[in-house]
Amino acid sequence: MPLEYDLLADNTINKSCLEYLLIETASISHEATVQVCDNENVRDHEQATASAEGNLTEEIGYNIGLKLVDYLLYLQKGKNGTGTPKFDQVVNIMKFVCKNVWESLFGRQIDNLRTNHRGTYVLVDRSFTMISRLDSPLGVQDTLNQTRKHYLWYPCGIIRGLLESLDIDSTVQAEVTEFPSVSFHIQTSK
Amino acid sequence: MSKPYKLIGEDVYKNRTEKINSELFTLTYGSVVAQLCRDYNNDYKKVNEQLESMGYNIGIRLIEEFLAKTNFGRCINFKETAEIISKVGFKMFLNTTPTVDNFSADGKQFNLILEDNPLAEFVELPDDNKAVKELWYSNVLVGVLKGALQMVQLDVDVSFVKDILRGDPSTEIKLRLNKILKDEIPAGED
Image (cartoon, rainbow over all chains, first blue to last red; front, side, top):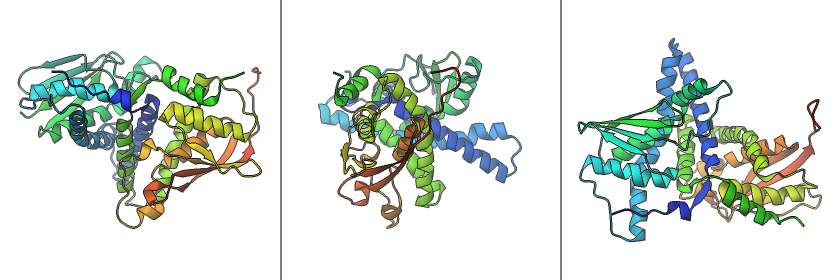
């Protein structure tokens, strides 16, 4: 039975606000990392940037993800009290992420969900709204690189936090090959 | 006769912006502020500064979107600027309309009262007796206003004077016009 969140009808703001905020967040976490690297004399700047910086923006997403499930379920309950999704299997949780979570956050559902039935899930969003307006003055290739490096930590963190709050340990990686289509690779331990 | 600003603001928000769930933005902003507080070991003065500088960077970008979507020309006076900030600017980005109040006799200073602050929903400041005195939680707005106005040649002092989060009866931002910057037009344009 489909859940009904019309969050979008109730309470909205301009998407740009979040985009601007995330761009600034990516930039401060980048600066923070560079500083840490300099302090600790880390040679491999690029490598450190890709991971440590991710931790900061990713952590912000993670903290949101942790709170999100409760909040969505609470709203759901307020609406009709029935139709609570069944979280008995990981795949049902993934469906919840693809449909309800994505729709309430980003206004559209995940286009494609695949699994190897051994704990790996791949979620494909063919037009991920948070990056769709990024454009580097240096061309398409640079847009891709920058997106990969800086702007996908946030959704990865959200997914990881969300799964964590439903008691699933996971690692989440995002890959973008054809802009703005993003695939999220989720490796769970169950 | 041109349309009143209130209608223009509503029209731009309704028809010309992409929207997302405002709670996602609220949670994200909250996580960013919390992260900054941790990074600066609860030195709230530094957090205020950092938030303002992030806001400034956002403001100088945001004004482009604002001008592109509204096609506004130059304001005839600061009163008009105030009206546009509240009824069009805040409406089109944050979907809220603050009240313009306390215009000074010389017409160079006013307060914006935010009845509804999407940044600070469900927020409580840390209970350490220090945050309520020092932290301006929504200080990013100060930077945004400053940055955006500077790009339209208005040098304005912006600061928070009251915040409901601190126990004040309302949330208020004070804007004071310093001077109108000299317009420098690039050669070859009119």
